[in-house]
Length: 279
Ligand code: YH5
Image (cartoon, rainbow, N blue to C red; front, side, top):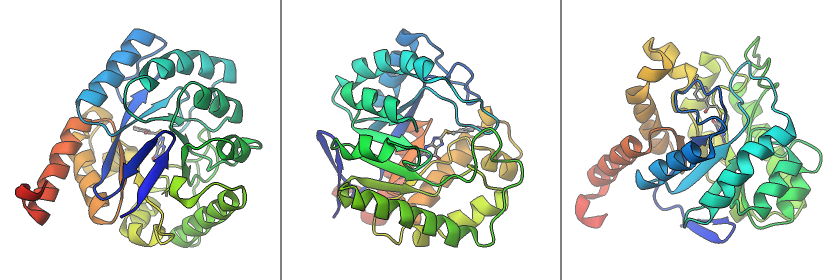
């Protein structure tokens, strides 16, 4: 069984982990944006923890399609006060950022994991992570959030995503980041059409061929809207279904908005696979 080295935490990966999203952006389309109100953000983080989150993922910059970059000072202003508070709880906190200065400040404030949609692609990011003992999620994205959905193109989406992640893993290894700190993510919705997302989902097992744990983030995303025809506030059933299918395809960490519902689905899967008496 592998164990994720995540700052001062050691997370066994023998059962899927639930990463609860805590959104600090004022414009969250997913309906639970907590704005700049520190109290409400902390309340939402507490809600995610009480619902059974194994990890909290806090992000202060929107990366949904069309989003405009947030200035570094604004990202820090939203993030650090909330992070300081929730890092003091006994739960590993991941910070969703691609800016090296934000990574350093977050690690100082107690973050146990860096979740980077650019897979440590910005100058200084690799060094910021290598200097500590946090875990890092390396995600694939084609283009940038502002324009990534305009005309996504791949000759072989699965091969190209796998190749990209392999290159980033090699860079991490060369920088001295141990394998037990790495998590990979094909980046559903990040510069991908529905067909690309579905091809990646079907091939999830192959994307994880590096033997490293896979994180999947499909919660409430547009691909589920395209499949079901439902707006973002009606994608709970689709999100839970997709999360469960991802686990059956080998995902080890699920990044979700709806923690309690995802946990219930995982409990059903575990019981039906191995029997409740063994849980
Ligand atoms: C991810 O997949 N995603 S932010 C649009 C939505 C709903 C949700 C239209 N950060 C990922 O969650 N980090 C984000 O409704 C992520 N993997 C990792 N590692 C986008 C998001 C969302 C966008």
